[in-house]
Length: 300
Image 1: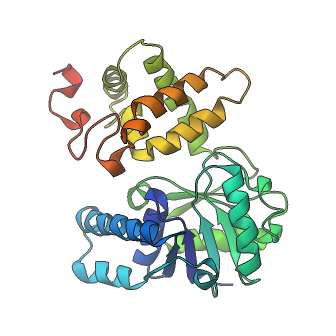
Image 2: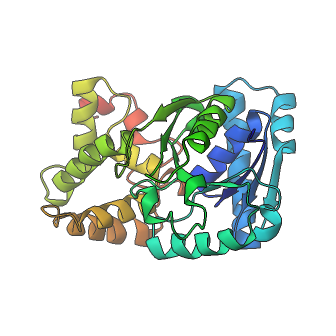
């Protein structure tokens, strides 16, 4: 089966990026959100990707218009998925919320529809039964700045139909990305498993008062020639996502100290509506963060 009609459930930072990359590649995609307000916010996010693709992908106005012509918005799930080949879920990293969504989706989606979760930290076998179609369910994870990072990780569970897995591999190539195929389930896939250690270590250094976040970023950037450090990466990911990731990781043996990290993120940032790049403020102020300033590496 060719995947031609896609639904993105959740038009947040990642959901809207994924949707625009799909539309930019010439496929039809609907962004489903639970309310008109959330749908309006998704439309505003897509407008930022218009400008980004013109600037970074050198897309012409005609190409951008064609991409937007392939985008639809919906607030009724049954209507959104009525002829979908693939539904990609990008809703919050909360088990109960995902379970509720899949229970509803299973009732209204056509039997042909493949379900994919873009969860950052969980594994598909946690939700395979509640989908009602375990053979047509897997994980499909994209990285922030989809248009620039060029990869998507694909992770099945023991019950995923190999033919379905390969259909999704083909789909990833069709939207201009490189499929990274995992051979077994692993929380956080490949990229996030490595990122987790990097970011949690930086956050612990900050929380324990070893150094301020700019010094930690500066150290990493100078030593590795990176263009940004861990706190700039956290702003890109979004601090609500970072909070959920740290809170979830704190349940693992030996990582209980991450509760303090999650609390500090909430109090110092989220409660102050500093959610990262999307809101114009996180650890840094945007659109001109300090780490891009001339002299930042020298502490000026």
